[in-house]
Structure formats: C-alpha cells, structure tokens
Length: 275
Image (cartoon, rainbow, N blue to C red):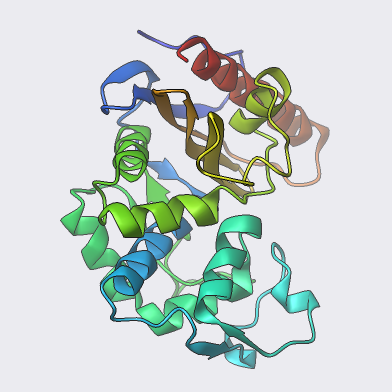
C-alpha cells in the first residue's frame, strides 16, 4: 500500500516497509535514489563482519587513529584519549554512535573498493558508500558520503534480519552493532515510545521477544533511518529517507526538519501496525 506522509513542502521521500521475507508492505517513492548520509556506513559494517566471520580479519586487531583521518561531528573516539582500539570496538563505535573517526579508521583497514564490491554482490545498484567522512567536502571529492533507495535498503535490512546478506554469523554481528544505536529520533521514536522499548537498552539482547536495530543518517537536507523490529516470530524492516534543499540557519529549514521528523515518526507508527 502507499504511505501517506505528513506534508513537508519541498521534501523528497523514499520509503519502503517490508515483512521478514522481504515482501513490500507499504511504500512511497521507494525507487528514488537519494542522499543517505551515515546510513552508508552499514555497508562498511557488513563487509567488516563478513571478513571477521571468514577469518580474514581478527576482531582483536589493533587499529590506531591518525591525524589524516581525523574528523569531528558525530561519535565519541575524537573526544577520548585512547589512540588505539581493537577492530571489533571500532566497529561497535560505528554502530552505536555513528562514529566518524572510527568509520574512517575502519574504512582504511577494510578498503572502499572492497565495500563497493560487497554492495555489488548484494545486488545493490543505487546504494553505495562513496567516500570516507570529511569535515569539508571539496570539488575533488565525491559529492556526498552515501546514496541509496528505500527499496534496496529495506531489502538489505530484510536480508540482514534473516541471515542471508553476508551469512548467519556475519549478519548477527552487524545486527549486534546496530542494536546499540543511540539515535532514536526518527522511525525509532515511535518504536521505543509506543512499542515499550527502552531507548538506550533495547540492545541488551538480540534474543528478547521484542527487539530492534537500526542505523540513522543526518546531514544538511538529509534524514534517513533503516532497520528492523522483531516481535515474537514477526519481523518488519524499513528504510525511510528524506531529502530537501536546506537553508542553513533559517527558520524555514528548522520547520522542514520538524515536519520530516514527524513523517519519520509516522512511518514508525505504521511499522508497529504490521507487527
């Protein structure tokens, strides 16, 4: 069925909700390719988990941050004194707080070309991680961190939920990392408030009767949320992406953000009706 979203003038939406088998339940502009901000980091986590499960990466391998990879904004590592962390902890920082510095360090180890090859092998055509995270994106850099469509991203979430993306062990590891996500300002807002889940401790166990995991992305003119929720034997996955032309520092842009967040919450409410 088509999703009816609250009016947010000038906003382009790409939304798709699926059941646990990957069958579409509701959509709006699902095939529209949009900027997805940090959602593209999921592709890095998928390839990282696959390499760990295959024994090609050690979870205990020490990774050290460096000045050339330094970036601020989201995350914790740039505020901490420790210079070196185990690879598994670097990946956990990406999943939990969308850590930009950790993303760059992990991407240097795994390789952007390898992440792209994994995306292609998963059948993704419009969904990709294009670059490392940068404080300033110049003319010689890719125009945006990542892009994708809700159709492809929701299908990837369904495959991660069923263990058919990178394999059961790898996919469970990705779900574990994403289940610690602290940003529940979008689709997750309805799930934690109306679904009775703790906004912080919903990651306590992937074996609880009701659990969810997700990855969000935020940038100027971008809000995105992809993930899955399971209640009993019922799983619903989603991808919701909104793009608009931002007017930084203006009341108009703030009103657009509020309207988009209301739309994201509405999508979360629709997800709950499918459980």
